[in-house]
Each structure stands twice: as structure tokens, then as C-alpha cells.
Image (cartoon, rainbow, N blue to C red):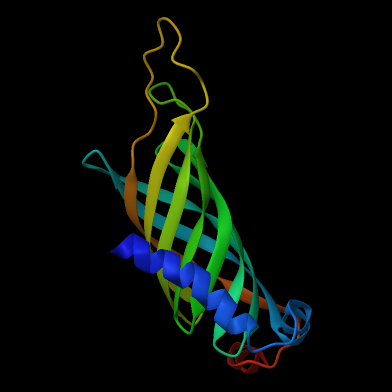
Length: 180
């Protein structure tokens, strides 16, 4: 059920928004462009163990009234390895979600592993709170003879991000008024 709802949202939200404009370029030209940068703190669970992570997130969004679309990238240090992620964001008001790819670097116990990143989030001004899901789809190193390391498993976590929004173009929406 949740997967079907997600697919419907992914397909309909951009189409419904684009229908309000003559062309996509009109929408890009008229929306406010924002770059947001800030620290992120996460607590994730994997195989019954909790892990604390600290990193940075950078987002670029085009905001038009209530709907915002954009891209994100994250770099985080957690439990002796790096977790990198990047992809797309879509939000309506305070509610949104990220969908993209993730990669976790290898350690003595784990192989470098890539996967899918999905995180619904809620934004309150300069802060956001996300429920992050990471699902691996494969390890980069092959399991050669004598290899004892394994790929990372799935993760679920809570992520708090504090971001300073910087207006790049436009500046006609509510958040911009707060910065004036």
C-alpha cells in the first residue's frame, strides 16, 4: 500500500504542478531558488545496535508557493565509516521526502555497500526531522576467498538537520521574508 502511494505521489505531484505552468522553464524562472547548508545528527538502528552519526547536508530547491522540488547531498560519519547520500527532494509545506542513492564505506568488518535512501521529513523553520530508511542492493568488493567482511544491512533512523537557507534567485516566498 505504502509503495503504491509513493509511486502515485512521485508521478502526480510534479505533473499537477507543471500543469499550472505553460512550460517547465516558466516554472524554474518564476520560482525562488534556495541553497541550504547545515549540520545533521542521526541515530540509526541496524541489527539491534544504535549508531550515532554526525555530518552535513546541502540542498538546492526551487520553491513555488507551497511546492518545492530539488536535490540533496549528505556526508556523514557514523560508527567508524562514512555514509554518503544524494538524490531528489519533493515537499509540500512542511511535509516532504527524499529519494536517492546511498553509499557506506568499508571497514574491517563490513564491505563498502551501496543502496537506496528514502526519508520522509517534517520541516519546522530552519530545522527538519526525518525518518530515514536505507536498503542495500550490493557490495562493491566481491566476496573473494578468505573474505570475512559482509555487506551492511538495512537501516532505520531518526535524523535532525539544522539548515541555514540562502536565497539564490527570486525571494518572494515566506521564508525569504524572515531573512529580510
